[in-house]
Length: 122
Image (cartoon, rainbow, N blue to C red; front, side, top):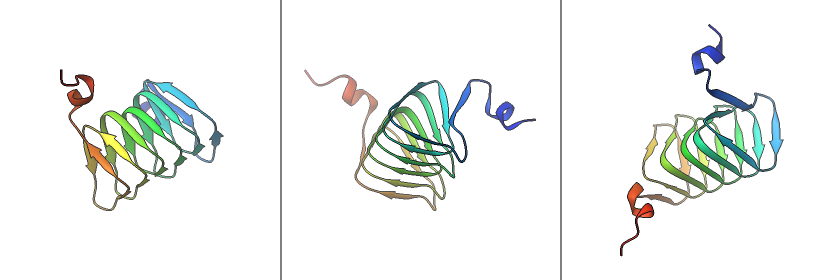
């Protein structure tokens, strides 16, 4: 079975291992980054940053799964998961945060109710 088949046919590998991209990225669905990215990323879906990936720029996503290195402000609509060996340097705002042992999170974190931002008090 190929690695693409294991991941699922709906996943798109946007920046492959060894690849690099500089600029603004807009994506939707399940998107995987395995290379280097310099610039902001706006994702409407699951954004997965692989173990050897390096991202420098703000990230806005529904869900973020970080296994590599990310430097920048992170805003997630549902959840951020930081895997063992991953590094996040920057601010983080999300309703749910999971940090595995061995991960590094260096910056201010704001964990809030998903409804808190959607329905301000009247």
